[in-house]
Image (cartoon, rainbow, N blue to C red; front, side, top):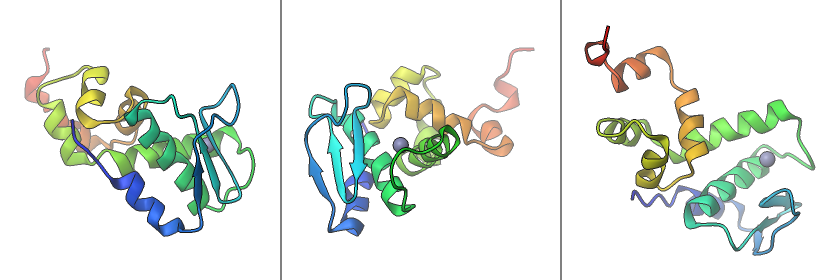
Length: 136
Ligand SMILES: [Zn+2]
């Protein structure tokens, strides 16, 4: 597993932030009110890292309260770009095409792997899966 400290390192920029280890709502595993980030303590390490980065990005963007679906989607894509570097994705894609397996190796959730793939441009897709590897 790749141990990325990106989420925890990013938190340093928000020194006034506090993490409270409690699930904020039955329907959501994490949330932020002012500078307090609430996180379900029952999440896995990978889930915790991903939801923490998600909440940090909300703080960075100055979001307050619930956000529209389109904003949440953009935050999800930002989380994926920050937590999964292209070179790491390329290395893992070299031996696996299973998102669950890739997620385990990258230390993120399967959804973050899928979101990262959604951010790829054509050149990046060609790099990960060269046309010569395709079956006609
Ligand atoms: Zn959110």
